[in-house]
Image 1 (cartoon, helix red, strand yellow):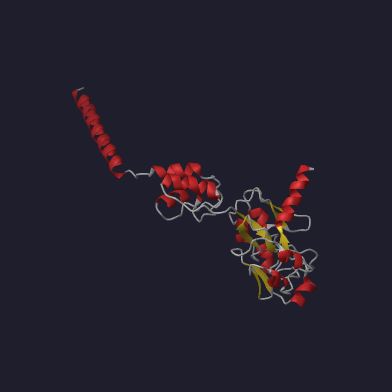
Image 2: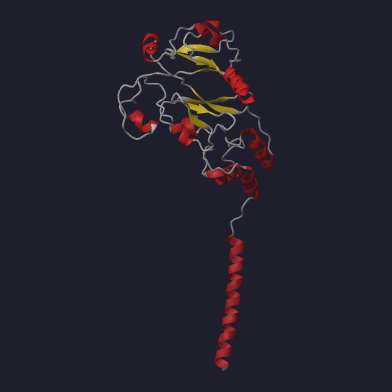
Length: 274
């Protein structure tokens, strides 16, 4: 009996000693988590899209606290979230204008070079013979960008081209990243005028392939009062830092390649109010 009692007491003492040891070790080797990481994580959208370049929202929060990512790094949250993150970090930041995705192609009626029967993915189709589309620079229309959008901000239009729903677009850039022909640009929402073509073919060749193509006529370049548009490699290119969206280039473009989104937005609002 005395032997059993002694063994029990020994076990209790050993348990207490080991318990204290574990408590001390736990406190000594515990990983201290900066409370700011949790605070930042709470104000993030929580979509874990990875557009910030980090492994999800929690990864971004940690990167900001460690000084490895800017407070403005959340492209989905844009200025609103950046301000909250900056307040948590106790820093100031330069507010930037909201940006949206714009599809730089509006070609219609372009014939195919051959019948494509492969995987329904623009990237896969682009690899096969440079793409089945008659225009080597135009949208393949297989909707890979639409599938990449996590915010349901894109859809395929009736003419077979992707459309952006600006109100939902977060400018995360996922659609632009998967487009093999680099047809999607992320631009400031205030910029209304865009050249919806990426063809580098000479004017006569481009016109035969697509009726909406840029033919490098330079009319836009000559009429622009702000020196904001120039023809480079047979394609009109806008300098958005100089462009005021005055629309003069739109008026003289013979193929209607240059568009003014302000008109489209106005028409859309009218449709909604009717």
